Image 1: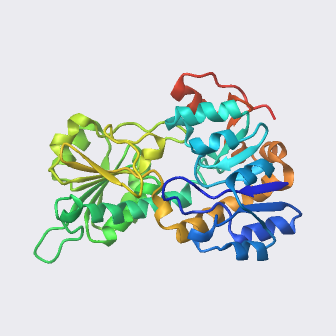
Image 2: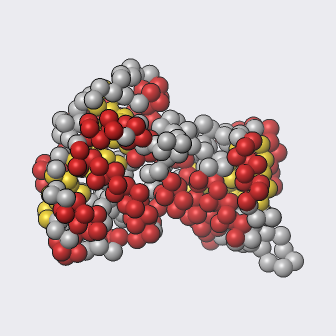
Image 3: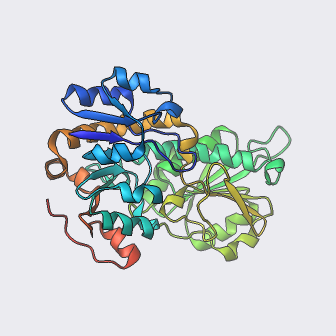
Length: 368
């Protein structure tokens, strides 16, 4: 198979979808790998290292799309890439379709095969290709939240961990999944007073057992969130419904409950965000303020630490890339139900129910 690795062109997206080690493995199996010039540079992988691994370098993004049977990316194609995606081409990346109707319609129009990292499943329904980036994003949400609590950044001027004689900041983490777990661990490690909220009592029991003493658990409800907000300095939105739009857990009407300079970090922004006042931002312009509350809603948080993120992501994606390349997408998805659940759009038809539901469009069975 001919595999293409374009350079990511989303704002400040520095990751790359395949390492030289992955390229070497594909070439060893008889596949051809084309990498766009400087695609891996910001992750620490210059062109020469890919060439040494057996990959071939192409000068432009259009060259890569034109020649490849399978495109492997990190983030969803942006508008400039829509015309480059071809009929019958397999695109394997994060799509987050349910929060982006224009992207969904563009990929339907392209009649390509869209296989989304975020809906590939393990037998136990966990999401193996979302987990590594959720770990990075969860940990970074606290790092960034702590930064924007600083007064020069627009925050209250609070040190997350406090000091002897001064109370630490209070952190509320909404969602006890991978993002929430990692955010709570990071905040606890920095010395904050942490509350993690979820609607799953079994999950709360598990978190209660394993978390440090400065992490408390809370059943998530509108009432409980409203009670927490007045004393909370930093809120992390970490709710995920696989493939679907995130629910709004903090509404605009709730913002006045918080003190000016408090910070909201919406890690769910890729799926539409779990704060009503959220809209996507970039690393170049990461925050905005609504009613005195600082909002950090960067849609590709792990892109800021590409050397860590690229390695973490490709460790998880490479086995699937190899399977798709060796067997073709139809056979690979027949043999691996978890990979089958990654199919979102096939030849102009939506085949993932949550995406169809988000836009009131018909959903069709995936025919292999």
